[in-house]
Image (tube, rainbow over all chains, first blue to last red; front, side):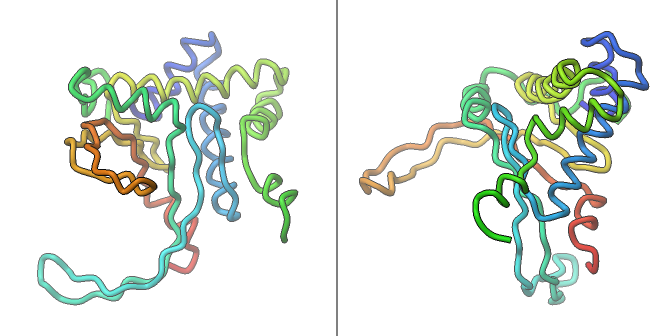
Length: 107
Length: 104
């Protein structure tokens, strides 16, 4: 599912205009980004939580050339699915197929 | 910057999202809360259908199927088998990565 498919599904489910659904999705992920950017956390019961993890500098290697590359310290968001979602998904292995992308949408 | 008050003030929840949506769309808080729940539900439902979810500019929620493997209960030191499972991972988009790393 892509962002535009999410907008479409939201408009359909709640009977709002495409523009309104677009605004909701925009605000939603904008708020998430803002929270993480200012070093905060995001906690969505039943779905999961996001926090920012600090990674130190390290020495990596270009797999193509074998050349060593210095990787600068960085901050990355980490997502932890809620227990309920984690357990519901876990049992899907071997039951439901993994659908890379359904044909109906643009990537 | 210390203490639990700051921590909770620093945590975005459904309440904060609801407020932001209500303000932007100029709709009742109650309806905004429904819309926020819808977004979360739609993403969960897609994942439960086996679909990855890719939000341009934010990141993607990707499913991975893991084989069963031997593990150990760290409390009891007992050998156990970690069953095969499907897990949900998140990868930040380049835009979110650079937003979090202004200098990088």
